[in-house]
Amino acid sequence: MWIAPWPGYLSSGDCDTLSYTEIRCAGSAQGGNFAFRIDLNTFNVTLENNPGIVPTSIVYPTEEGIQETELTGKKTGFSVVLLPDGEKHHFLLTDPSQAASTFTKLFFYEGHGMKCFSKFDDRRQITGDRIVTWKVDYSCSQVNDVYFTEPVEEKNISEDENNGITTTNETNHTSTEA
Image 1: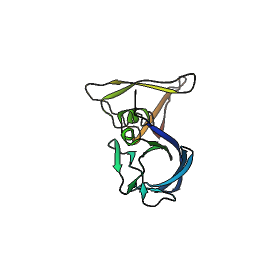
Image 2: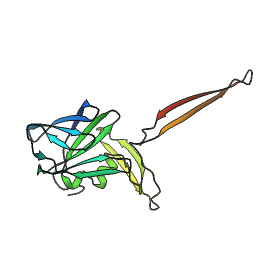
Image 3: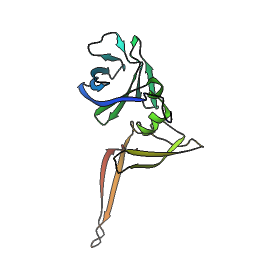
């Protein structure tokens, strides 16, 4: 057991937006298909065709960091990690011990909310696998705010060399850089 106890990360997939407050995620694991719905206001998870059965927990980003909420009901033995991607969402099914782990926060959540880590390198191998290297910031002065960023105002100033006219172009956009 090097990084995670078996089974670690079970499955992953994409979610479809049903409404502003609800998404539906579907995938397969161990030869079977599954689907579940997530209420984005309460973060309740409902397994389709299995009422009363819930994942052990759901993990999701907040403005303060990464939140894990334990769900009530008969447990499935896995947790859901919800990964926002702009207007879309992706998910991971994980062993509950991995759901809110430091590895999950650094690798899948890009360090969101972590104050004592600074990304050192992020690259892909020739096989396409991703390798991310973080270094410890012993002063804990990092601000890794990946999901809840304020709009950044960008000013482009150029001067016309012929007549000394200065023009400014302002652009508002939201930074999503990790």
